[in-house]
Every structure is written in C-alpha cells, then in structure tokens.
Length: 168
Image (cartoon, rainbow, N blue to C red; front, side, top):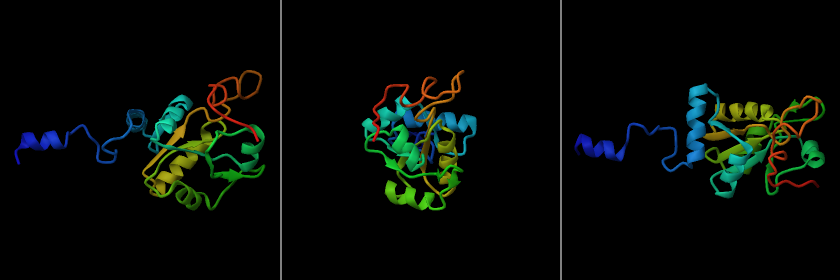
C-alpha cells in the first residue's frame, strides 16, 4: 500500500487513545485536557454534559453522597456512585468497582458530577488511574461555587444553568 493511501486511512492528526468516531464535544475536551495536562480525559460544562447525555454519547454519573442527592436534588435517570460519604466525606473504598459495574465496564464514556466539580475531578483522576478509558469531569457541578454571600446555586452549576433536575 502506498504512503498516500496509508495517510488517508490513518491521518496523523488522529490520536491512538481517542475513539475513531468520538463526539466532537468529547474530542474537544480531550484536546483541552492534553493542553492543561489533566489526569483524566477532560472536562465539560453542564450544558455540554446534557448535550452528550441526550445524544447518547455518554453516561452521567453523580458522585455526590446519597444524602446530597436526596436533599439537594438530582439529575433524572442518573446513576449515583458516591466518591465519598458521611459528614466527614470519607472516601468510598468500593467506588471504582461500583463505577465499573454500574457503567458496564471501564470502556464506558462517563461524565462525573458532584456539588462543584472538585470531587468529581478527583474521582475522574482515580478512575483514569484504574484503567477507565473515557472519564470526564462536569465543571461547576450540580450547585456551582460559593457566591459573594457564601451561597451555592447562583454562580454556576447544573441547577443554575436550568438543566433538568428533580428533588425527591
């Protein structure tokens, strides 16, 4: 086969670790992650996360504690795999196994969501170190950062962006 034919089949711009037909939002997030040297596949905004879920390109996994999910609210039809739990936020020693089981394997495309995007970034890094292929962090989380009045929900986050959520 000629060099020209090979370059048409395997363009040099394509990365070996990125899926061949990856959603453009995920490909862009992977690129930004490489530039920023993130220890996981990448980060997406809440709006991008919802687009990806609606397109069937990724699964949204809430890594907040069951108490947070129950009392603060949740995204409908989302798996809850707590990264940590209790008032001390003790790390869930079964997190990686539960994530793999609920996601259907380490090759699933996962978007991790927490309160503000910090715990989900830690969880994404841990999952990546454990061999998960495509774990992305949802920036801003469910409630966003604290505002000037030390309140959440007015400075970003899933709810602030008026994306689907419910409270039990």
